[in-house]
Every structure is written in structure tokens, then in C-alpha cells.
Image (cartoon, rainbow, N blue to C red; front, top):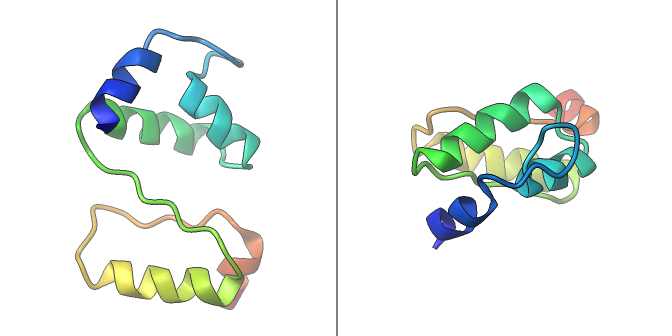
Length: 84
């Protein structure tokens, strides 16, 4: 399902050279260099999992996700980074 969404948005430049997905992530406060990595991952049939919540919930989700041996885990909130 994600591949057709990415395919449909692939050529659309919306904001500062970012796709619609990238612009949405940027609007959420995700750094542009991370957005470029995430867009590439989606275009190459990889998954992107985002967790949003209180710092303690995000840290708990990160701990669970790390048990699955993900390719990478990145936290983008200063509050979460301090709580980790």
C-alpha cells in the first residue's frame, strides 16, 4: 500500500525540494537530512515507523523496537533524548 502512495507522490515537489511526505515530516519538526533518508527508504520498499507520544511512551516504544533488530532507530525530540 505504501509503495503506491510513494509512487504517486514521488515526482511532486511541494516545499523546499521535498515531496509531500517530506514536507509533512518537516512540518512535524524532522530535520531535512533525516527526511531525505526516510524518503529514500520508502522509495526502496523499506518501512518507516513513527511513534508519537509522551517521552516515556516513546522511550518504551524505542526499547521494544530495538529488540527486533531494526536497521536504525532515531529519536527527534529533545525531551525524549534527555529521558533516554
